[in-house]
Image 1 (cartoon, rainbow, N blue to C red):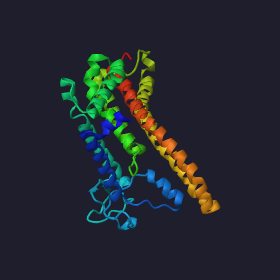
Image 2 (cartoon, rainbow, N blue to C red):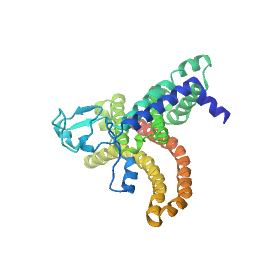
Image 3 (cartoon, one colour):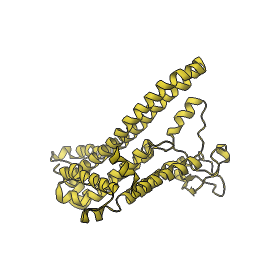
Image 4 (cartoon, rainbow, N blue to C red):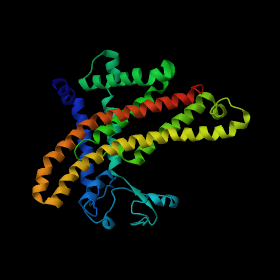
Length: 324
């Protein structure tokens, strides 16, 4: 406990906490208020991304976005007002959502926490948080990247995988803080991260093997008559890999929150069923189980960041080494 407090109470740790607190304050102040058809619908709507607006409690039709950007007409499905352009824009528009606030905060945390790591590795001097960040970075290098890719290739890809791991880790952990939103519980965020891995697979594979050789080596040695069929199969497999990454991360992070909300929802359900006595009687059980799941989610948050990056390492390594 004393060592944990030393990590948090150092200057770098306090600034990191300030970044997280700032993201929570901005999100809480400007996120649109969730409105559902009932208490349970409103409760579960907290898993849905909320746009940042100037009047969070105003009716949806009257809300003004903090930042509104016009979209091409073919992207009307992403219009934040459901396809009805308002204001000075008569076409579809998108806005800044609360998830983006935490994504920005995660980037700032990565930059801030690792700012002193190079100096620490050269001199051996640094604050507790810097030492912790350096230890995690070396663990990712020695236990995640190098065993699959080897030293030479692993060192080339290490900056990419370190950035990916800690970006996801901070997003997952921030989502457990009171008042925060979990960006990785959104299919759009996990889908974007999967696209990043997919781009790394294809582009790095083409860069290492050559643009033509990469697609040629995609199919193993088979009779010529089977080559077209196998090419389609391998192409589907190429797409399925990042798709699995997207669904795995989304389902695990979203599922944990749904379990927590379900336990909390028991309080409201029993209140409606048996009155205030039922709600007060269920409160200790519901809150206790929710806290227990939240403790497990700390482990899940770290595990899912590891699994996403570990699988990304395997997929990218298979792309740059066709024999694998």
